[in-house]
Length: 213
Image 1 (cartoon, rainbow, N blue to C red):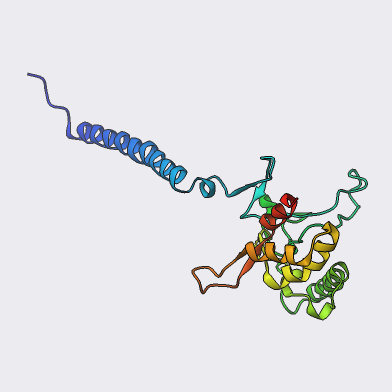
Image 2 (cartoon, rainbow, N blue to C red; image 1 turned 180 degrees about the horizontal axis):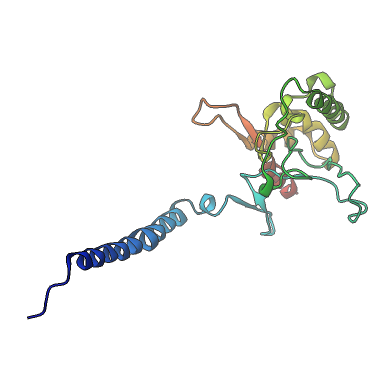
């Protein structure tokens, strides 16, 4: 008759079997189950909320903002400042990365309300936005001149979207009513019906503009 294994050895074998079983359940089976459910129930969100153009090209995620600038005249010149494209609705400013909206460098300016640097930046941005959109500087909304905490905010306020309607309509030879209809279509309501304020998804709105015939 074989001698029973020592208690310590049996305990280690039991622990090893438990480890293997839980690895299969929690490390393989559960992730596959959750992935399968997410792909069936809400695949678009599970895959990053990717937005595609009319020709099927992936142009970004509805969850992450991006710039809509004119091509640089000299792409090799690091000192050339990018200029906003008048045909597109512009996002709020971003302090994420050197050119803004860098998802690998999510951040805000970290400047407080008493900062002279922030005040100077806001005043300069207000004048620039007002001139670009052809409006009174006093009417420029706060999100047009201040960056979000993440620097990746995909939405702008309804007020900032409305401010840009005339400029976009003129640049695209569209009627104001056409552009207003798209703004209304891509306006998102408050979270859970009461948190925050309504916002307009800039990427979805600009993509819809491009698809207008």
